[in-house]
Length: 360
Image (cartoon, rainbow, N blue to C red; front, side, top):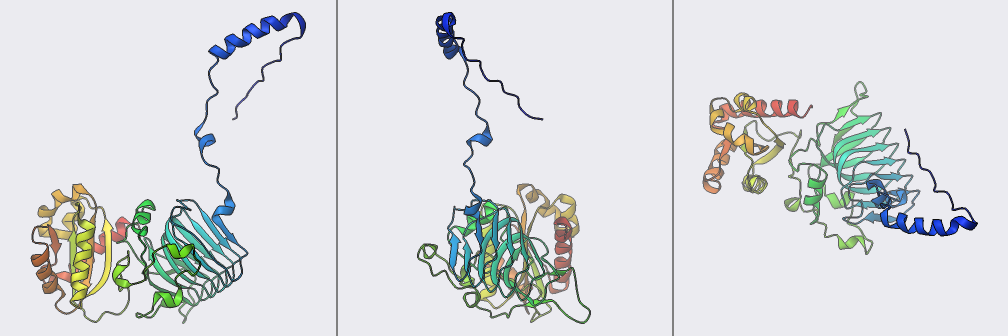
């Protein structure tokens, strides 16, 4: 369907001119202004502002606020350093070679195709690669990352900070606690070979993706210090030093994120390892399955919003976590594993539920 518009006829010459002049005044007084539609009032988007293409040996980027949730395309770049310091809708990276790439929070998917020898820092809802070779990625991904027809892929936990990044995560609809960076699914596995692995535990982010060198991008106050990272650094599927785990669950409130970060700092400061984190909405029946005999105590708190769960590992993790909660969070309702014997089941119950909830 379309719109049909007709053009007003020009007035006839001669005797009709006086009549036309009077009529035009009446029309000017009574005629309504033509409507302006929302799509006519939007600022026009120039695709070139959201594309890096055919670059060689350059340092380029976009400052906070310059992408503002639009789609972005990176293609045919070689030996480049590329920084997207903003949130976006989706990003595709095609045919790039030997590039260092930082991508701020991506609301949807990031798709690497036909790329090789690139080092990246990426935060996204969905990660996919196809026909890629030797990518090294510090990743935050809300869903299970997928590789296809790709080899020599290495992954580590996202580790980055600049002042605008936390708000950009919110604008992209991403939780800093939902990161499955090490839970890789390989669509095209090879018998007897592994197409992917983990980056070294002591990998230094700046050795892979250096801080930007151009004057305009230096204005972004970047830190790669693990203690300042927006995303909590988790072990994921790395080998654990102990078979003892502990589950702690914070319920929605004004200080949920701050409390979770504080517990992480306290526990890791005592030598315990943060294995995984999750933010997810729970219903009463979910609480019954996860918290079992303690469920009735926590069900009224579920109406306030999603919960944040933390799994710690290390000898004495349960006792250590209980001690910190008693000392630091005495006025806060928190679920914590009761004993070493029950902790493993607590972890399984919660994360099995969370994976089903998030469709993983």
